[in-house]
Image (cartoon, rainbow, N blue to C red):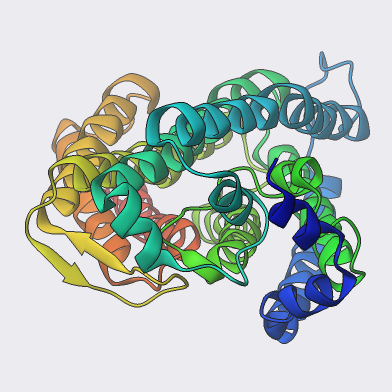
Length: 367
């Protein structure tokens, strides 16, 4: 490591000055924590109301605890180390950044000069780096949540899964805020890499608030969608077995466009996006492309079509097995495009839940 970089790390004056920009969002962080606390209260109340099957031998607390433990263990020992190693390898070996730029990208964004990085290392390489790391693990986290955590660990109980998601989101958000506003390990490479697994380079100095907002709202989207579907579709925790099965199918329709469509939209947009346009959001570069939007629609349609034909029970008519994925995919593309960047993980599933709820009620009344 270069002497100038060591001096920067050990200079307490610089450390206090460097974290000032990150701390400007304290009111937003406080608001997010309060929202997560509210989501936790709602999630606990719904989990308490849930009736487990008679042959289910594990208690609600045990089910929730093992999901939270699985999340924390896989984050700590698998996904976050993998993200750290991948980012380090790509930055050092593929892009070839200097030690100073490596430190700025991995730890401290307050004296960050995006234009300089784009000029030295080329914008296309930075875009590919952001895409590979951020959306690669985005897909892994959602796939793990829907298949392993929801389908296996939670045994398909939506209220149990929701509670685990909110607990995990609150714990991580609190740890990030304690580190930042308590000035604890703010310049430690390993701690910050554990707290923020994949901040985009192109988000610049707003990369960390982008992640805090995105992950907090992702956690909040689960109780909001659960409450909407439970209260307005008769698929709540006291519902009959048939309706609970439909509720599980709804979860795939609501969240698959975020898991696959949103991820592939950035992949295609980063590699092949030629027709770009400006959007609003947290980040120094807020752009999307028409090619990326087309990918969001295409992959959302594929995922939701598989969901209606494979997962949803036979009660859904053939016409709606086709029309519902088209409606959900179209809405997902529109909301992903116009939503404030870092809020789409909340806006997309909530809007999808509304349209799924409307179709469910229409089909139920017709039957």
